[in-house]
Amino acid sequence: MGKLFGTDGVRGIANIELTPQLAFQLGRAGAYVLGEGNHTPTIVIGKDTRISGDMLESALIAGICSMGGNVIQLGVLPTPGVAVLTRHFKADAGVVISASHNPAEFNGIKFFNKDGFKLSDQVEDEIEKLILEDYEFDLPGGDSVGAITQCDYPEQVYMDFLLDSLDVDFKGLKIVLDCANGASYKIAPEIFAKLGAQIICIGDQPDGININCNCGSTHLEGLQETVVREGADLGLAFDGDADRLLAVDNLGRNIDGDQIMNIFAYSMAKEGKLKQNTVVATVMSNMGLEIALKECNCKAVKTAVGDRYVLETMQKEDYNLGGEQSGHIILLDHNTTGDGLLTAVQLTQIIKKENTSLHKLADKMTIYPQVLVNAKVKNENKKKYLEDIVIGEKIAQIEEHFHGKGRVLIRPSGTEPLVRVMIEGEDQKELESIAQGLADLIVERLG
Image (spheres, one colour):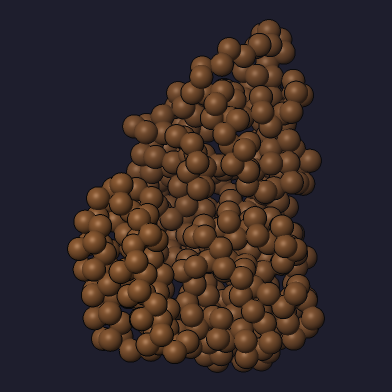
């Protein structure tokens, strides 16, 4: 990965790290690369509710138009909705201005290609190279610069897309929605009300600086309290740009992305819709997911952490269900990216079709305790645990001790001089002792 693009676009503190100047450069270089030689590419732009969104959008649009590119402004719209609208308008690219689940002071710029998929590392590197090398573009004259159009109906296009994925209504269900004061604050209540659910909304009053603040998928406490207090059937929590979803059952228990994937796998396999009876998850997914999948004759394929790696594997191997514990769920038969609203309506549809409760569906999977301990080591030694015989022997001993009912995962930090030790098994106290012992050994050998 380069100096500008991370695993999910370009991010930073707005106006400090992600400046209007950088947004302008990204617009210019993005229009050049994604236009594929077309001097008048069309690019759609959506954003979340952050106060810095307008500033960065203006700069980004200026960069695109300076290259002769045309812009369709979508306004506030969930990230997956931008992917849908990119395909709807047959645009050359889509752009989302959002920092997802991060606090309001952060923002980000993420590109989709014409098919609504995140850009490959190769394309991002091409855009980045133009910026870092200060490439001199051949700019069009004043009468050939790009134009700006505002789309008056983006929510309707996205909502129609979501409704087309369903064949039941939600009448009889009482649902609490936590919109994280983000991009779903209008469309989520509208679609669930349209489907006949009785809804209660929290996190639906954005003011530009309260996005993800003690609400949404990263702060489930308010949703849990509201579900229990109101006697709701379930609660659904989105993050700031609504590309992920976590849930709460009627007992107030958190239902994470692994459990949601298991529910989907169970339903899709029963209907013969789960390709190769396989779910694509990451190495951080709970061991309980694999065990539960085996019980319905399915399996899990693991990737590196990050929904982009999940999607790459899904495309390469022709799978149609994947995701992360954090709630990024990719239903590739429907959309090209993690889609919190799609996940929400599809999950609710399963509950309605099965005539059951979320907690009964979630209980098909047992969550195994996980313990994470950081081992502080020299930065240059972060990856040397792979070569250390003593550490290797210790890991083998631990895994043998678990007899298939536990595992060890070692991950060097990408940003800090740390090796992260994750131990998973059945006994929390035993795991804490084992994880600390292994972390101490790594510090002793590599610190």
